[in-house]
Image 1: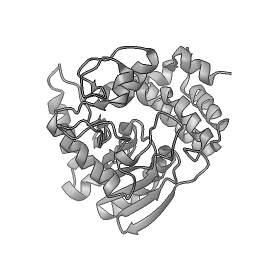
Image 2 (image 1 turned 30 degrees about the vertical axis):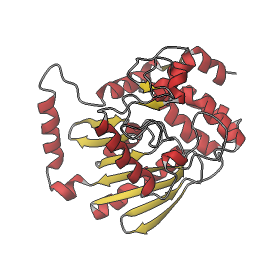
Image 3 (image 1 turned 180 degrees about the vertical axis):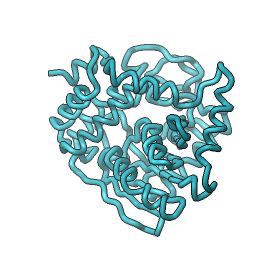
Image 4 (image 1 turned 90 degrees about the vertical axis):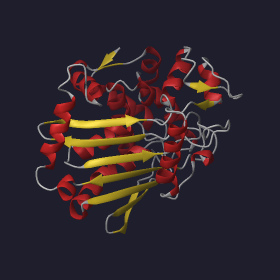
Length: 328
């Protein structure tokens, strides 16, 4: 089924409202999930809707809470997501952090008592569209062991980065510390499909092609020990420095059982004119143009941006099981 983006957002918000989510929060979540789907990131898109709705209905996520921001230092914004969805808290950071960064040159937003941050490239890109460089770090429920171990301690712990380019779309980098995002394994499990044997380990620490067994085991870090070390870095930035649950303390994002996950996100926004002076945007554009001078090279984020642009005209393709969920 093909749906125009506004109609998909309306249907998603409607379903969330039926499951104890306020209209404003439902709209924020719907926009994020549909944008993820349009970007080709189905593991963070509408396949999350069933779990989101179940968690809101059960009270694992507070669908009615409004995130609250407080200025804890001149360039430090602390945001309490209130055990609600992450997207309203991220919207609040996008609204308030740019002014702090423009005033101070650099500013940070620390989000605590949060939830699934979705496609973080979509969040940092919103800062780049305002002329800022942005970095974002998020922890997720434990799914990856320290290098050499078998017990999950870290999440897949994604990072995202965006930078404005003069006369062009922002450059966006978004990646998990695992070899693949866990959402891809979740999507394979829902479809009953196998996964490559180098994506994850089962509960006994053995490579597996069974997505269900992979979800019970641990993810393989990209770059082996280096990826695990970076996951630790993200854990500190997103959880240790925001005062929220570590990955090993967080409950699952895939079911409605237990306490709220209580995850954390850290966003750092930089005014490039403050750090690099006048003309920095042109210097950044020079680097980008030099990279793509090779006809076989594409800047990170361009595929996602192209898909989203096309979706504005064609709409997004909704898989049958998702369509049955959202369509009356």
